[in-house]
Amino acid sequence: MITVTLIPGDGIGPEITHSLQTVFSAAKAPIKWDVQEAGLDGLEKTGSLVPDSVFESIEHNRIALKGPLATPIGKGHRSLNVMLRQRYDLYACVRPVKSIPGITTRYTQVDLVIFRENTEDLYAGKEVQISADEAHSLKVITRQASTRIAQAAYDYAVANHRQQVTIVTKANIMKLSDGLFLEACREVSKHYPLIKTSEILVDNLCMQLVVDPSRFDILLTENLYGDILSDLAAGLVGGLGFVPGANLGTETAIFEAVHGTAPDIAGQDKANPTAMLLSGVLMLRHLQLNDVADRIENAILSVLSDPNVITVDRGGSVGTQALTQLICRALGA
Ligand code: NAI
Image (cartoon, rainbow, N blue to C red):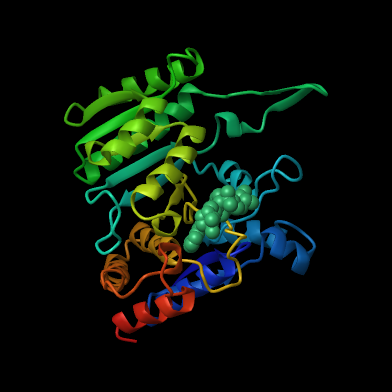
């Protein structure tokens, strides 16, 4: 048994992490959960947004799976997600975005992997209030962080037989910061002559993705562009309910869906747990538990390929619990 820290999180987090625990148990995955409350729900129960026990658990287990955590808009505490990524130096945010058979969209052949630098850029938290009418945010780009996310992307490309890495910037405008990111990525690309490298400006990429996402393979980018592109790309394959993610560092890894707490549907059995379940599959593969990862993934895909199974976010009536039960049945439980 491998012990994993499980943070249910806020909003729909408890519903989708419960779904994940149910499916993992049906698949007899050799995972023991160390459940830790954090976020606003944790605040009510423990008096702290992130109690020390959460850090102790992550530092002990080194692998965590988390539901989304709420961040107040325009005021209040800093993002706990950003804090965790910076604290554990989870520099590579990896998000596979793939068309799912049975989830019909305008696109049939989306197979992207977004590599998002996860520790700096405008998310470094360096903001200054100059006056009541002026505020500045500092965009921090370093060669070191740019180089290691580029290396992660190219290593992944080689290991997973991918063809192309596209470096995404706005280096025509931010010549120094995005220029440095681009230069660092170009430097890394020279060591991978078998992988095709292309470059694109982020605004053009948004248009190209909506027109024909099948042209792209791995997208290598900074923190903010990666965040926005992740949601855009999720829309290409059916929505946020379908896209998983991993935050990888050298010592610690935290797996989570791309989406947030979805407060508009929380507590109503409407959340699509697929993104969370696929994040769990990524975690199992990271732990080299490939057999059980394949079984769970195949069960999810076979259930979703049934035209009668339409989740609530797709306009149907199959809620969180019903989908969970169907997947458990597909696993033979
Ligand atoms: P969101 O991703 O929570 O929701 C956007 C839209 O997608 C909503 O209409 C929601 O109902 C829908 N949606 C999201 N996930 C879904 C799922 N699994 N099934 C069905 N529908 C789903 O983004 P929003 O509203 O901008 O953010 C809400 C909160 O989440 C904020 O406090 C934000 O800071 C936080 N957040 C946390 C993240 C994390 O913990 N990694 C990531 C993104 C946002």
